[in-house]
Amino acid sequence: MPTTLHRGSWRAMGCSVVVEIATAGGRALAGQLLSDARRTIARLEQRWSRFREDSDICRLNRAGGVPTEVDPATITLLEAMVAGVAATAGAFDPTLLAPLVGLGYQTSWEAGRTVDVVPPTAPVRRGTVEGIAVHRRGSVVQLPPDTTLDAGGIGKGLAADLAADRLVRHGASTALVSIGGDLKIAGQPLPAGWPVNIVHPTHDEPIAQVAIGSGGVATSGTTLRRWTTTDGSEHHHLLDPLTTRPVAGGRRAVIQATAVAGTAAWAEVFATMLVVRGEPALADLERHGIGGLVVRGDDEVLTNDAWATFAAGHHPARSGA
Image (cartoon, rainbow, N blue to C red; front, side, top):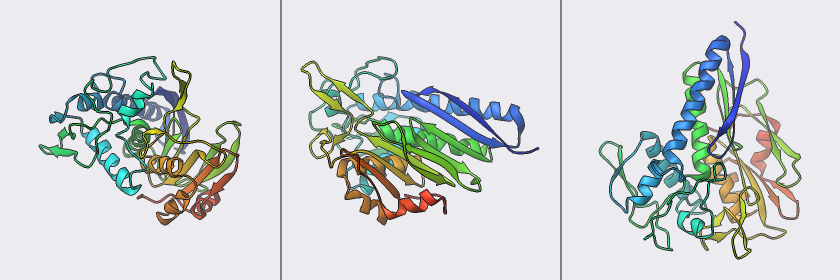
């Protein structure tokens, strides 16, 4: 039976989800795989959302340092957070929930749902991921008392990674999972790679294309989540860990960044680093072999040398960071 491409789309994690799979198993298997991907992503959203009171993330944030039993996938998420902080020297930081809520980001963009995401006693100064401890064979987690976490973009990227890898294990020859633009391609590479368009943040037109054999792509920016507070101040959701304020704008500031890495989670981490650290961080990604593209406030589009590798479609993304 020839391999055919099947596609499904829906909304989850506050954004659009697209899943494409290639399989020789026919329409029935494809339907089963797409349904499984939908359940997998819904389960991870239930575990990781800061807008669900019973999620692992919310329970950990409310625990005040008390050991808390969580899903094994949440352990994987926490490990990814810790690794991301270390790899970017803190430019990626998942402990910014308290200052983010303080700026008014308390409501889910998808459902208008607000929960008590930060304990009333949480300090203005956020904690750290360095003191996270895992106990009892990896099922119980203890956060430092002052630490509150937000899965945010890395949660979407990691969910795409886990869902795509699961699809391949269960019968897809190739799988693409995109959650809000953070995407993972797993399995047997397509001959010319999987084409992925990068769209300008304000003009809504393609500015680049990469061809990925396998790996992850993620885009982050300051134009995606914006809101106005009661005093008329406008904010966006990407904070500078050094100031705990929204990343500063300007003509030379990076307003959107895309990274190509071995996984969607790593791509999200390094795309965030590009926005926070700006154009000079392109060289840091180069040292990791990660392709990077940035769009500045003056509409200038810049890339590092590794980007050309993926744009040309010569090689698949690397399996590590």
